[in-house]
Amino acid sequence: MSDAAQAGRIRVRREGRVGLLTLNHPPTRNAINERTLHQLARILTQLRDDAGVGALLLTAAGRHFSSGADIKEPLPTQAELAAQDPSMHPAALLHGFPRPTVTAIHGCCIGGGLELALATDIRIAADDSRFRFAEITVGLPTGWGGGALLAAVIGRGRALDLLLSGRWVDAAEALAIGLVTRTCPADALSATALTLAAEMADRSPVAVRAIKAAVGGAEFRATLAAEIRGFGAAAASPEAARLIADFLAGRAEQL
Image (cartoon, rainbow, N blue to C red; front, side, top):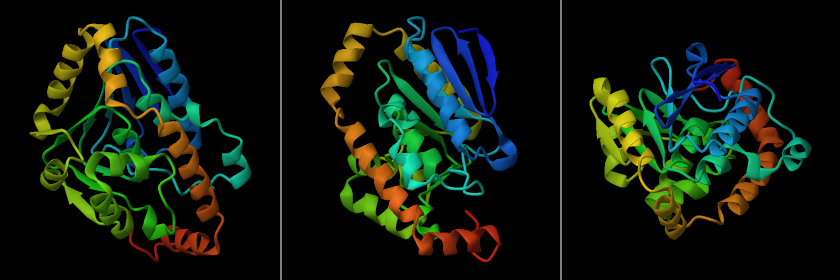
């Protein structure tokens, strides 16, 4: 992989032994469409197989980390979802990445963007960042493994609180409940996250693999597959179609 490359809505480069992935479509607040998911999967596979990459840092351009899945585009059908290989979904690739993974979050981190962040090992958030699982407001569940990941990170009750209410969480609450690992001033976010990723990139790869294996989570691919099936069923429902139409027409709360 070259030191710098551009691939649609994803920018990737190397900073020493750290692979930096940047969500790069600020006009949509880094909304993630199907094409972006495919690009992200290809890039993650390349980084996973690159022995020169000792750690991964996920960041975003613009004012916000991500507004989540781009529901302005048609939702995938149940048949399309059933044909996907869950092991090649970006969430699975991030969760199973063999070296340390860090996410630097600023601005709003919503829905699918938060699901991808939860698939990484460590989440560092700017102290003015905000979080939300808004899928329920348009009649959808999480579809990228976020439900299972959230419950594992903050506990079942707190996870259901966020998933079923769709409410906002500020950085202070996110840190208190364990949704993020650390917070820092917004102007220090990039340096803080890169410094941590660089430190981890220099750790013994044998020890890192052993530690990540001991922490567990090998069953995630199965839970991701179940979430994808549940998402497909909900996306095909008349209720989701109505709520999404209301959102797109400006008749509902904007995410």
